[in-house]
Length: 105
Image (tube, rainbow, N blue to C red; front, side, top):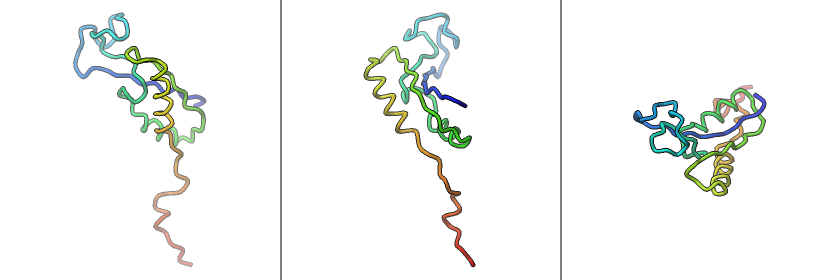
């Protein structure tokens, strides 16, 4: 993995008139089954993504790829950047059980 784009999406809990693939409706249309959302306002599990990236040793950038038809872009960009920074965390450099070990020497 060389670069990660963080992007969120919302999808409906129930069938919509357009179906899953959108039926070529414009983003934001009430009959769409899914739409891009500002990071943290959709259904993507960003903590799970960061944990997986940490497990494989990824140390590259987390770039915001922002789209949300229902939100002002300047507001959304600021909020999305803050949310990505909040969800990004370094992995532990010790095993959890190591805290309970004692030197018996």
